[in-house]
Every structure is written in C-alpha cells, then in structure tokens.
Amino acid sequence: MTREEIIQAENLVYKKPELMNDVPMHYCPGCSHGVVHKLVAEVIAEMGMEEKTIGVSPVGCAVFAYRYLDIDWQEAAHGRAPAVATACKRLWPDRLVFTYQGDGDLACIGTAETIHALNRGENITIIFINNAIYGMTGGQMAPTTLVGMKTATCPYGRDPKLHGYPLKMTEIAAQLEGTAYVTRQSVHSVAAIRKCKAAIRKAFENSMAGKGSNLVEVVSTCNSGWKMNPVKANEWMEEHMFDFYHVGDLKG
Amino acid sequence: MEEREVLLMKGNEAIAHAAIRCGCDGYFGYPITPQSEVLETLAAEKPWETTGMVVLQAESETASINMIYGGGGCGKRVMTSSSSPGVALMQEGLAYMAGAEVPGLIVNVQRGGPGLGTIQPSQSDYNQATRGGGNGDYHLIVLAPNSVQEMADFVDLAFELSFKYRNPAMILSDGVIGQMMEKVVLPPFKPRRTEEEIMKECPWAATGSGLKSRQPNVITSLELQSEVMEQRNLHLQRKYKEIQEKEVRYEMQHCDDADYVIVAFGSASRISQKAMDMMRARGEKVGLFRPITLWPFPEKEIRELAGRVKGILVVEINAGMMVYDVRAAAQYSVPIEQFGRLGGIVPDPDEIIEAMEKLKK
Ligand SMILES: Cc1ncc(C[n+]2csc(CCOP(=O)(O)OP(=O)(O)O)c2C)c(N)n1
Ligand code: SF4
Ligand SMILES: [Mg+2]
Image 1 (cartoon, chains in turn green, orange):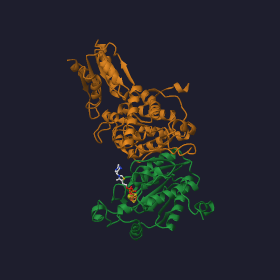
Image 2 (cartoon, rainbow over the protein chains, first blue to last red):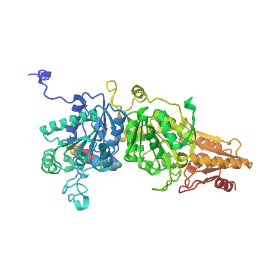
Image 3 (tube, rainbow over the protein chains, first blue to last red):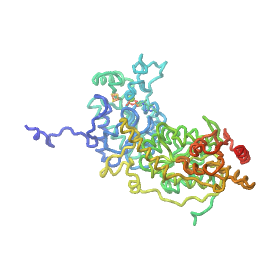
Image 4 (cartoon, each protein chain N blue to C red):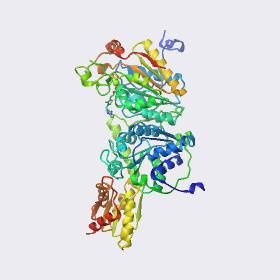
C-alpha cells in the first residue's frame, strides 16, 4: 500500500483538534499541560463554541496557552485569572469563558480571586492543573506540595512544622454556594483522559447554561520539577498524589 | 431640556452618574473612604436595569483592577474607583494594562499617606500617578479635575482618550473634590456601544467572536524575546510621545500680565484661585496656571510662562512632587518654590499668600 492510499478518510483513527495550531509546544515531554490543552480544544470544537470563547491564561507554565489554541485569550497577572474572567463573562454573557491555572497561581497568590469568583457563582469554568509544584520557576514548593515531598525550597521535604500543610482548594470550592460542579480528574491513562474530557464538557456546558461556577482540578505531573522521567512521574503520581488528592466528582 | 438641569451633588456622585450617562459598560470597585459614594451611587441607581451597565463590588482592589484589565481587554468601557491605599494595591494591574495596551478608567480620590495614612484629602499620589506607579517604562493618561463639574465631564473624556490610545487613563482627584457638593450639569446620555461598534472600534480586543474573519486576539504584556520586547517598548514610547504632543490640557487665569504665578492642580488650584483673587484685590499681579493633564504635563506652556514672570509658587497638597516637573519645565530660569500641607491638612489662602510673599523676597 502506498502512503497516499493509507492517508484516506476511512482510515482516520485520530486527528489533531482543529483549534490546536502547529506551533511547537514549550512544555516538557510528558507534561500534563499538553494533554489538558488538547481536551479543552476538543470540547470547545465539539460544543461549536470556536466563535464564542475567551480563554484566560495564568502566570505559570501555561502562560503561553494562547500560543496553542486558536481562540481569543487574555493573559492574566499571577493569580488574577478568575477576576479577569469574571469581567469577561459579565460583560459578554453569551461567551464561553474559562481560566486555565496552575496550583501556585490558583491556590496561593490567587486564593482570594479563586474563592470569590467561585463563591459569586460566576458562570465560568476554572481548569486547575495541580502538579504540586511551581513548574515554571524551577520546581519550588507550592501550596499543594505533599508532606515530605522534596522541592527546591523544601529540599529536605515539606515539613508541616516549617511549611504548613498542603491545601485542598477543590474541597474548599465544593463547599461554596456559588459552585455548580466541582471535580478532580487526572490525565495519566486513556481512561482518565476520557473522564477528564467529559468533566470539562460538563463544566463548560454548566457555564453556558448559567448554572454557576465550575472547577475542574486535574491532578498532574511535572516531571521536570519532580526530577523524574515521564513514566516514573506518572507512577509517582498514582502512588502518592491520589492518596491525598482523591480523584472523582466532589459536587454536581 | 432635562439634560441641562442643574443639580447639586458630591464629586463622587457625579462620577457615578457620568459613568452611566457616557455609555460605560461596567464598574468594578471596593469600598474605601473618601470615594465609597461612587459604588454606593451606582448600586442605588441600578444601571443594569436601564443601560445594561454591569456594577460589581469586587473582593479587593487587586481584583477590581484585574476586572478592568479583563473588561478593557475584551473591548468594553470599564472603570474602577478607589482611594490611595487601594490604588497602591492596583499598581501591578495598571502595569499589565499599560504593557498589554488595555484601555480603562481608574479614579483615585486621594487621601493622605503613607500607608493607611488618613482619610483626609491629599495630593501625595502625584508621583505614583504621573510616573506609572507599577513596574516598567509606562505612563497613564492623568486628568486632574478641580470641580464637581469636571468630575462629571472627565469620565467620558478619560474613556475617549483611553480608547483612542489604548492606554489606561486615570482621574486623579482628592477627598476635597470627591466629597464637596457643587452645582453640576450632567453630560448628555450616550448609549453603550453595540457589539458591532465595539468590534469596529476595538479590532484588537479579545471579544471571542468574529474569528472566521480574523486571527485570534491575545491580550498580553509578556514577550520573552528581548529584541521583540524592545520593539514593543519603543512602540509604547512613540505612543507616549504622540500623547505628549496632542493631549496636553491646562487652564490659565490672569497669566497675561502676571509678575508671579501659582501653579496648582485639583483642589489646590481652587484654594490658590482664592489666594490669587485676594492678592489681585490688593493690586498684586498674580496669575494661576492649572495643569489639567498631569501626564502629559504642560511642559512647553510652563517653560514659556517662566520666561515672562519673576517667580513661580507651586501649591500642592504634598511635600513637593509636581514642583520638580515645574522646575524641569521652566529649566530653572526663575525662582520656583513649593508650598504644601501634609497629613490631610488642606492649605488655606492666607498661607498661600504668605508663601508667595516669601518667594517675592
Ligand atoms: C507577582 C508574581 N510573583 C511571582 C512570579 C513568579 N512566578 C512565575 S510562575 C510562578 C509559579 C507558577 O506555578 P504554578 O501556578 O503551580 O504553575 P506551573 O508552572 O506549575 O504550571 C511564579 C511564582 C510572577 N510572575 N509574578
Ligand atoms: S516544568 Fe513541569 S509543568 Fe512546566 S512544562 Fe515542564 S513538566 Fe510541565
Ligand atoms: Mg504547579
């Protein structure tokens, strides 16, 4: 069979989402960010919202999310994406508005903006990439770093006496009146990726239906920050992260 | 007919009414004395039921300014107001707006500092407002009203300038102008722009729609390639130069025959006007020069004025900030002194006259 014969519509088993462009990604190989980007792109297209979406990117490794998805974006200051998204959605109520934030961005410097946007019931979706570390700045301790986990700023392991405890923002969000749907997902296996995509879809649909705010946490790997190869990072996540960050729906 | 009605209200209330009337799409703010009447008036007026304007009490000034960033970034006419400590908290957001070229209006009804300071009036945020205040090389367009009427009039003007140049604009007021009641004629009603009008005026905005016929729009201040970042900075600098050439605003009173002039802005100019009138009544040829735009600063005009007077007294309610701009503009050609009170105390005309007498010696 020639190459041309193989490349036929009926042989198609996988296609890159059309909203994803051909720019090489800056993410490290094995990083969860790329997978979640793809899911977001697929869901936007499947909902037919390509012409009606505003994304808000964070400060963190996903700062350049706007390079990869061909939609309108605003790049927010560190932690402030939910405030930016609040305004976008209130001023353009028929748009699909979502933020895409890391754990440092969402659960540390932007804790107030996150809680208040969720609690006001803003009709937005927050996608929360929890890799338990500050990836972009080189692997420092995050509010979500597990007890005992080593990072550049807790080289002997996170010690609650010194550093306090990891923060479960998603559990907090589930208690807020304004949230419609709060879930914790992961993208470490094909099954998990499928579930995560369904969660993003549900969250986006809720936002458009005016049901309130939606939080999709994705327990993620940062193989560079964790100083592991991608396979080892996935294993480590399953072994340690899932024990503390239980995957599943918390509300809605 | 109704449009020309003369009303009596506070400066802060005038800001709120003017916002509703000039097609403002959204207000986001956090309470702080002496400006809380802006949000209170808007909440009472319920413009979301009439013009469709969004009004939201944010969780902090940090959130407010980032809501302005978000709103301006998607092409809407949005504003916030606060007072000095709150505006201090907004500086990061303002730098992002300047860097990403996001229009928007920030009203600062100044109070005394530093820190929590006092709730009494002050003009000690002059440096912060005119130098940028946050990180990086940037400027805000800064308008300084000296009456309740100008509080009302400058809302639309600030929005127009802000969108024309894609640059955040600030109304730098103070507790005197914000709290005092005066007669005011509110600006005529101007409808909010339609979606089509916004797309036309702001083809750069992240509105989320129209992507079939254009590239995606991205609002960002980030650029990691130094060569590109330098070009972006140079573009900003060219824009600032154009603003300096075209948008300087000022007012002169009795400057033609003056031997001495007072340079003052905002509430200090009102008190200085009284002092000038008192000195004029005694036959002294004193004039008043009032910068209306603090940035761009009326440099040329002050240089020209300095060439034909014997001395300049700068009156400002701070320890000496604008005086440096006046000296630089005048190129140190005549004696220039500053007079101000601190800690929330507003100078009285007699003190200004005394300071003028000292300058004359
Ligand atoms: C105000 C401010 N403080 C600090 C930084 C530096 N900084 C950039 S990214 C980052 C942490 C990002 O971590 P996270 O949100 O977990 O995202 P990740 O890179 O792990 O995806 C920090 C501290 C900044 N850019 N701005
Ligand atoms: S540093 Fe971590 S979060 Fe950032 S791209 Fe690399 S693996 Fe991903
Ligand atoms: Mg992280």
